[in-house]
Length: 312
Image 1 (tube, helix red, strand yellow):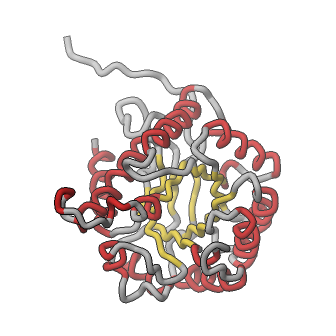
Image 2: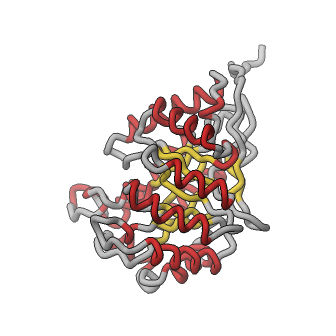
């Protein structure tokens, strides 16, 4: 008797969402089974990697992280183009860290100017990620949504404290929003309900469950993401049947293990690259549809793995 792999039926499906516009628009989601369980369901769209670009030249990055971008780090447009032209980025994630009130505290108007320049210079989808201060992000993302009408941006993080005004702008100017909550399935569902009640379409919403790096609570993040996928696929929970995004780069490269000089821990340069790649792999296995990453070598490792898994 031939061996048959046991399978389970799924009653739900992750919604497909299109990022960007034109020939290089990217579609994510559409899964009908657990991540890469190709013997049980369909995966019409492979997980996508977005390469991050900062709106100012970082001064606190480890040497290995900044090295691939050193000559363009002061110019977000050149940085984005390098990611696309040299490293094959399908999506750019512009991190508006300079707007942080606890940092440079640049104005919303300055941020909009940078976003418009980058959006006009590239032909791949653009994610605009704020500084994670709800009040400042509300001010910034509202203006970004309006100023970039027609660019089909993905903006976030949109939290419970600012979803009404940012969500309203996203509706008005047809932008996709990133629904961000702090590693909790119930909070994630609640915010999605609130945004849908406001009028934000589920087809314009992506879940950010928030995450940590390898060794920094990632098992908790994995568990929450896994539960979100289970609810979406086996419990017919429509409020959680949305693609998930993981902002990995900033989390990985801020930990001491990514940069500390310690011979007992192996090669410093390779260590950070591998931590980022392993973190991305774990979150992809938990259901991550969009992975925001930093180092080109980490991107290549995960991209190759995605290719192999999608062939199985």
